[in-house]
Image 1 (cartoon, rainbow, N blue to C red):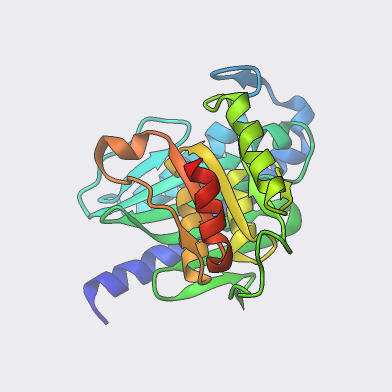
Image 2: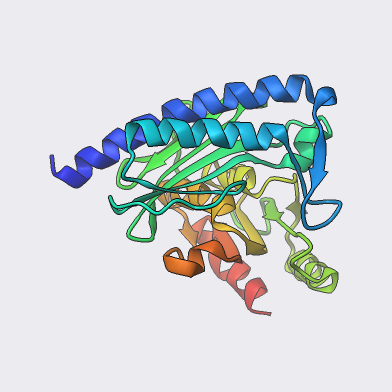
Amino acid sequence: MSMHEAGLDRRFALAKSIAEEAGALALDYFNKRDTLVIETKRDPQDVVSIADRNVETLIRERVAAELPEDGFLGEEFSPVEGASGYTWVVDPIDGTAPFVNGMSTWCVSIAVLHGGVPVIGVIHAPCDGEVYASAAGKGASLNGRKLSLDPSRTIQNAITGIGCNTHVEPERVGQIIATLLGMGGNFIRNGSGALMLAYVAAGRLVGYYEPHMHAWDCMAGYCLVKEAGGDHLSFPAEGEALLKGHPVLASNPTAYADLLAIHGR
């Protein structure tokens, strides 16, 4: 086993362990959400709570204790430069709006990048008791069951996830949905881009598209989709580009061309 393989295995095991612990903490906050102080960030739809911050703090502390040379990028706090070549990219609670409103469609998303490529992706959906896990060359799984995409699924006979936020003009969102419907497709939005990417890897959705997402929302999902046999749009993941938002598209290979056409319109 090479040093890189050993390092990947160690980080994969750690990511799965941390995701379980972070998910348990987040679920405890979810169950007592009526006591949380909710704040807004960019706009009234962009919310954050002490749960987000404390879950991210837990993940940061666990990584720093085990792998102090690794970098770290999370949604809630400033990034930390690393020296190992590995960077953890984390959204402590993706889907905070569903979370604070008592809906189950939120998750803990943990990715590890190496050379700007997501080589580990773990997404824990605590309300459903589901852990999606993937690592480069090791495949993707859901609660230990191997995931493999069905080539018969298309945008016409399956459902596509669509994401939107205030970075995207409402007219653009309407155009995306109208084009998808015009091509014979159908769509869903559940409030968590990371979880919908996990659903793509699990075959529940045939694809997911959002014109603007941050790395912490999509890197774990990208690894999952790739390891399940899917395709995804490239995401600039090194230097300052990693800190900026970019379009995100991931899908079953049979749907990729259609969704790429929607992206290009």
